[in-house]
Length: 564
Image (tube, rainbow, N blue to C red; front, side, top):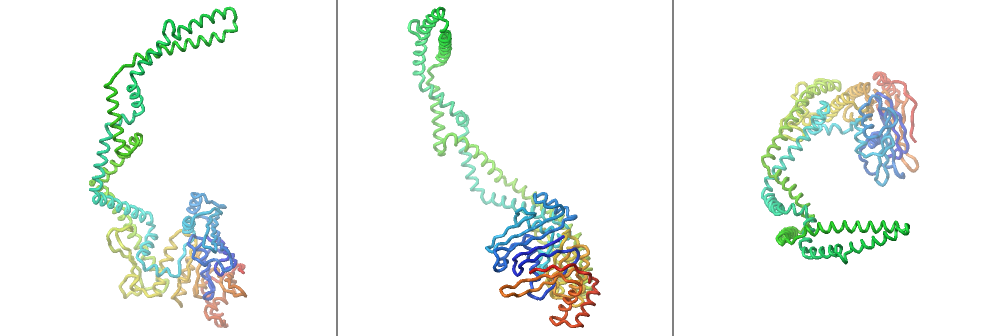
């Protein structure tokens, strides 16, 4: 639950630190005092986007931080662990810094995060119902989302949406294949021609370096044969050959070595040279034996190399690029073949449609099972809110397949037993709509796992006994969750377990909002003010005491905390 909220330089707030407890906490104050500033600040630290002008005049930046106690919130702990954002055990600190230039930064447990991450975590910690929630309730999409939330059908809704996207993508591919058939056919024919032209050359392309070397030998074969013979003659000639002459030198040096052993190293070098030349002679002899004039082979190489050069010039590609591009052409051909396979695309369209309809059917079934339970629960809650003979229904209107399923969800209501239920946006008056909205919100909030609920003036447009019923309903909700309510109704405020009052102070050069935690007597005065205006009489005080006593919530308040 929310333990502490700290605000610095935000709109009319200079500095504020406030601790929160479990149960129902009410915030009251005169119009314009800034009651909703607290909710606005909390919304920002939970990831809402900031509007301009939120930094208090004269300050460079605003800073908002919220501390939460996570006892029992295993999913939140798991989320923090998954994102590497763990803090102190069982605790979580959210902080938002907003600069007067418009930039903002967000932090979770001291680590910088994106607004998306902050909002994703915030949705698991706090559920805020704004004062205009009943207007949003008139929208079909909102009604559908509320039912899905109550039915815990978010997974089925997401699966339906994803399969819808897959179905539409398959339809798009099929239509594109049909529309672009002629263009793709021309491209395919061009690729087929190019591949057919390159196919006979693949081996030569892969062995291009070896082919060039062989062509070089064939082109200079006569020179190689003649020069090879000369080299061998220079080595092997009986009189002038290098081998003969080196053998004579070797014999002379051996005679010298018998007389002077210091020439041993020189003798070894001559031995090595003689051995190397002998090995070279054998290698050259084998080489010369392999050499032969083959004009036909040279002509064949000329023809094949000329064809490779012709194709590479035609496609304006180097020979290595031509081999690489051939692989790309084949891949593109495979793509075109898949795209042009109209039957395969039609089969894919059929399969994706079946998948969508199966998911949508599961979603419909889950919605319809939950709809009756939601209708009964909201109807009972309406009775508590002075709509005792009214009833609430959830009806389904079949529609063409959509991303959200195959039916529209429509909330129907009858405010009196004598009336037939009609669509919520057609039959409910302003006050009735506000109460029905509150009934739905409290039912959904009771079912949800979010530990902290905030209602920002959702009681607008009601009063008297209805307001008393609303306060009682919120107090019962506060027994299960931490509930924070911004209200202008004394009947609602009297049911709070804790009471905070917001007031606006004007100084010489600035206006600031102040938040005070009220004790027993101060609560009486605040309720009396809400009942009778600025002039508080003994009668209004008595009425306030009776109202607090009747609510059963006039418990000792804790130490007040102020802001300056």
